[in-house]
Image 1 (cartoon, helix red, strand yellow):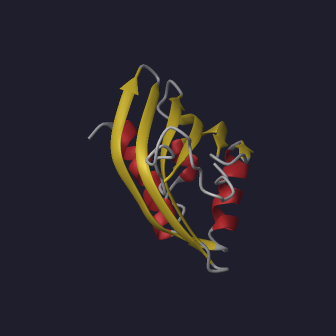
Image 2: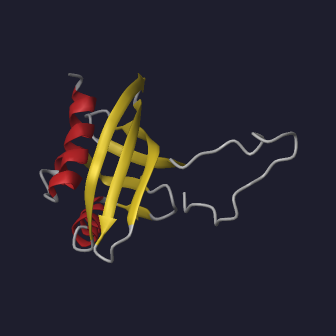
Amino acid sequence: MDNRERIIRLWFDMWLTKKDLGISDIFSNNAIYIESWGPEYHGIKKIILWFEEWNTRGTVLQWDIKQFFHKGNQTIVEWYFKNKMDAGNVEAFDGMSLIEWTPDGKIALLKEFGCNENRYDPYKDGNIPHFRDENAKWF
């Protein structure tokens, strides 16, 4: 297994087990993490704070890797994610992460992109689109 893929799998496993298994070993000190819905965490201390705090409020139920793409110092990983917050709401979506690596093999930037799993064809009944009467998802 490619070392970059091993690091990404470790990161996902940390969320699934709710345990810091070496966040500071896989992210650079000045890493930037951008969630698909807007929050940004600058630096390893903020990434660790977010990880620890978030896991007091919710549980990642599933984070399945579908495929990897590597080019130069970048990796894209396609995945499926599902969580349940302590308040009871469940969130699930398809996503991708764009990762930039430092020369010594740590994550310098991780930027997530999300895609609603509840998709539909607005033109299934003809040439006039019919969109669902619902708020757009947060990503």
